Length: 104
Image 1 (cartoon, one colour):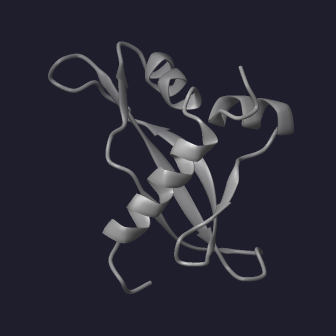
Image 2 (tube, helix red, strand yellow):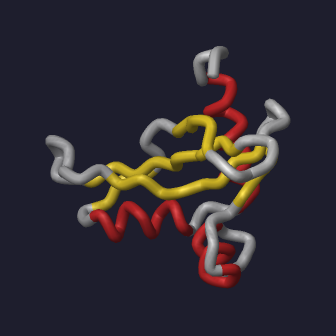
Image 3 (cartoon, rainbow, N blue to C red):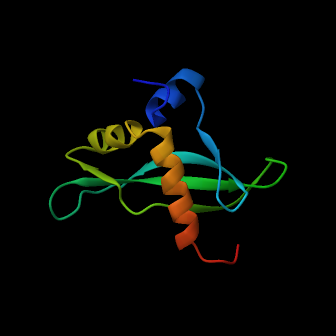
C-alpha cells in the first residue's frame, strides 16, 4: 500500500496522519467503524478528526465525516477507508469543518 494512502501512511509511520484544516487548526485522523451492521447487513465506516490545541497537548473537539464506506465485515469497511489517498482524506476534513457547528 502506498504511503500516500491513509493506511499506507499509518503503516509506514506507525501513527495517525495529521492535517492542517481549512480553519487553520491541527487535526489527526482515525477510522470509525459502526459496531453493528445496518439493515442491509453492512458495516459503515467514517473518518473522525480530532482537533488539537495550539500546543498540541490536548484535544479540543472533533469533526467527522458522513459514512464513506461499507463492508460485509468491520475489517472490510475499514480497509476501504485505508485505501483513500491522503488528498481525499484532507478534502474530507475540510468538508467536515464546513458542516461543523461554528462554536467550539
